Length: 186
Image 1 (cartoon, one colour):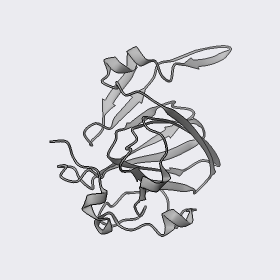
Image 2: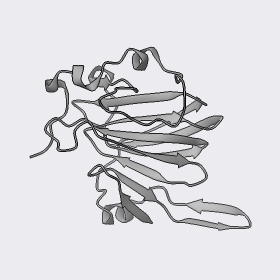
Image 3: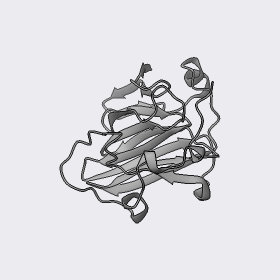
């Protein structure tokens, strides 16, 4: 497996080995010892899947407290997946990175605790999978505007995406009280 650091410290692009023949293909999407060798030693406690249509944007979301690290991948379709550093005091606070994940490339993205996460569906539909390091605690979830100009994510589309009410009404990162954001470890 190939692991590539992104421009945000701790956010990793993972390219698992794919084995194929005339029958199809096989890929190992999680194996504790192999991923630990790459520095991913978290315990996963919850798996999620979402199914969405073209133009759907889910995010940007984070939990604090009960931070969730997420190992994400696309089973079917294609998305543009984004992580944003939301750790107060971080040298990369408010910076983002984005990658295309698809059922075809079988890449994964590790989004550590303390980072906002979101994705935009580029294909007709997408089946998206998350492995999470903590349980979902809706009372601690925060959302940030997908088009926050201070962050400046370069989403690969024109127009307005399909959003939930929560995401449509989300504040800018600067408008969230600093005490609500995770702290950068010293």
